[in-house]
Amino acid sequence: MFSRLWQPVFWLMVAMAAAGALVLEWRYPPRLPASSMVKASDAVTVPPLQSFQPLPLLRYAEIKERPVFIDARRPEEDEVAAPPDQPPDQPLNLIGVVLIPNSAAALLRPEEPNAKVLRVPQGGMVDGWRLETVQAGKVVLRKGNEVRELALIRPKTPPRPASPARVVPQRAGALPAPPPSVPPAPESASGS
Image 1 (cartoon, rainbow, N blue to C red):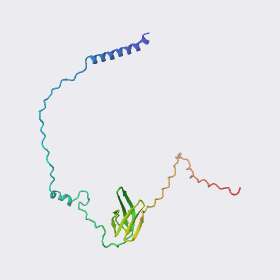
Image 2 (image 1 turned 60 degrees about the horizontal axis):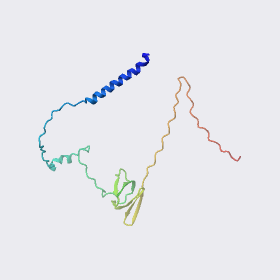
Image 3 (image 1 turned 135 degrees about the horizontal axis):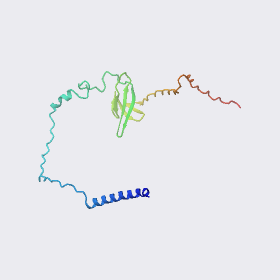
């Protein structure tokens, strides 16, 4: 009979112990130790802010002479926008357009080898031609009464690589499996 009652008696004792602990916490709550209070001074003084005075420009001359973000640590030479020895009407290729709200530009590249890409804003000039309109796939250039329309050059997509053949694991000493054969094309029924 005791073997049947020991579990309820055990849990009753645990419940009584928990209830007693709660009553003790409620009647005698824990208190923090009294801390010693340090009286702060009545007035805290903050020093006045000093106005920022940059160093004289002569102190920054070395930064201009030896730029940090250029490998050679020498200033780059300013490039002339259009050298005078180029032919006046060199053919241009439209390789990109920039369409931003309230602004548009064309990326043009002359057809000569190793030519640099020119970024021309709408209304800008290139070799005497004014960039009149910029659209998603074309631009219009005007020189006097002559109008030239350049279409956007789209690169050809390269062919996709062939998918690799499926490898089937083989048992040791087994003959290799023959390559998969291509099923014959269905013949069309003619006349019947």
